[in-house]
Image 1 (cartoon, helix red, strand yellow):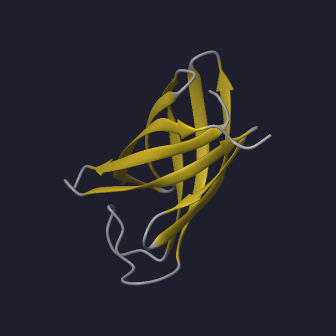
Image 2 (tube, one colour):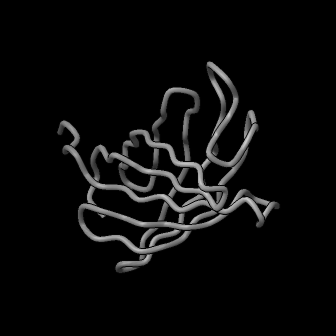
Amino acid sequence: MESGIYYVIFKSDTGRFGDGLVVVDNGKIHGGDQRYLYRGFYKTDGQAIEADIQVSYYRGEAKSVLGHMAKFQLTLSGKTTNEAFTVSGHVFGQSQLAITIEGQKQADLLG
């Protein structure tokens, strides 16, 4: 997966949808949306990707696509190409709170 800025779409088993932006760079992920910030790490092996993301509320109503939570950790895995990824997983320790995230690269990082 190439470093860059990705537009992401979130889909939960509850039928809720959301979106945001993430910066992907050398194993690190940073991003956010209107209510939450995302920070974490990822690793790839060929087209396989695994990620652990900390999600934390910063403003507005603390209501994510997974429900009312102020802070949680996502454990994710899936597939990636050079400019896109799809991962699925759940809130750490709460496998019933499942999520799928699709990302599409929008821009390169400044070098």
